[in-house]
Length: 258
Image (tube, rainbow, N blue to C red):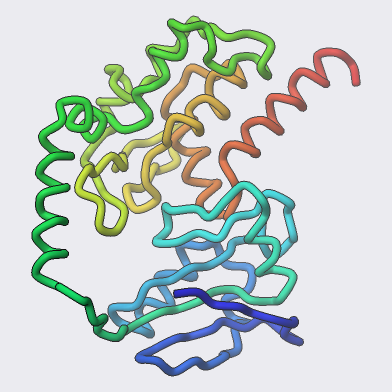
């Protein structure tokens, strides 16, 4: 399924797609809110719905603004959030669906079951599900290709401190999550505190790319600060990779007096 949205609203709005009916609503009260706040408000109004929204980054047309789904999943990189912001579209709320017809539903179910069994019987997949992409830090560091100091280096002395299988990450890891329909459950759920600011489970934990961009590439070996930065990016609707690389570039430029 897909949605094509043309034109621009005269004022902030959100789109609801509920049981096959599309409606556009005033979103003036939501404009200026972070993604988590927007989602919580709309989910109270539409019980059982799913929400895609933009934060302050999308509203202000930041070129690497994301559309945030379920508070912790980002449609990122090319600035989709800015596209929604340019249309004054704060959020899309979806609820309900239609039953799909299959040529052979029983055969599909059997094949799906077989694929899952084969997939989850693979020791490598089991290990990946256990630690997720965040555990790639040490391996890439050993290979000398971990983005470090704005890509000037490939080895980070504090790599173990930010690795997803490292002791410091394990201290804040509280569970695993999955994307819809995936049995691997490689998503991290974390909880902690950095300088008096809570790191909330609902915003998810950092993936490898985030640990590298906001960690080693900025010479930052504090997994708590990276986790808080990841949370702030999800709340504002910012791409974590572009955010980290931008900061690293600014750090090097400052060091060189540019």
